[in-house]
Length: 171
Image 1 (tube, one colour):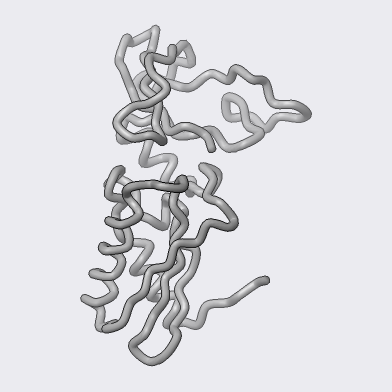
Image 2 (image 1 turned 90 degrees about the vertical axis):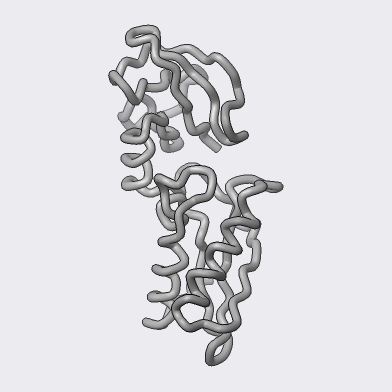
C-alpha cells in the first residue's frame, strides 16, 4: 500500500526525522531510517510511525519522547508515536548521508546488502567481507568483540593504524 503525505505531514515528518538518535547523536532519526511516516489524524493530533533498529531496542522510548517534544514545540498538542515492526528495519535503511556521517564520526558504516568493498556483487555474497577502517581506510581489520557500546555495533581494530573502532553491524 502506497501512501502519500500531505504537505503538513511532510513537514512534520521532516521535524520528527530531524531528532538526533539517542545512541548515535551524529545521526538523525531520518538518516537512521527509523521514521516510517507521519499521519495527521485530526487537527492538532498526529501519529508518528517509528521502527526500532531491533526488537527490544532500549532507545525507542527516548526516540519517542524526543519526537513528541519536538512536535509539541512546533504546536502539535496531541502526538502519538507508535512502534511499527513490519517491514523490519535494516541497515540498508541508513541514508548515504548517514553512512558518511558514521564514517566521519569514526564508526565503520554497515555495508549495503549485496555489496562487498564498495562494489555491487553478482551472485552469492562471500561470507567473510572486510570492514574498512574509518580512520585510515585499510581493509585489514580484526574483530575484537561482537558487541560494543550498543548491541548494534561490534568492536574492531585496524591492523594498519592499530586504532580500535566501532562497526555498525549489518542487519
